[in-house]
Length: 65
Ligand SMILES: O=C(O)C/C=C/C(=O)C(=O)O
Image (cartoon, rainbow, N blue to C red):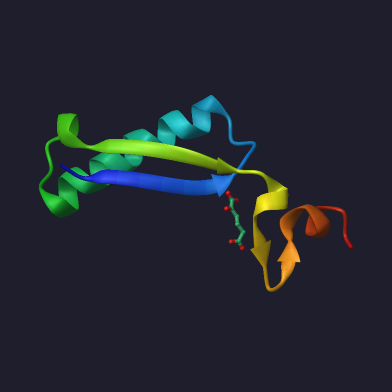
């Protein structure tokens, strides 16, 4: 049973999540041979203050600091 966890910055819409879940489920079916009803997708939102890239918090990059 594939269990796919997606960590991403907060702010994606329900429609984006819906489409992503559909597409990644199709991909798991095509590449792993998983049955669609077995595929789980979990979205975990990260606040921009909880994630840093190259030593800079994403909230600071947004503000151009
Ligand atoms: O990893 C990065 O460089 C930026 C991260 C982006 C996301 O996680 C996102 O757009 O959801």
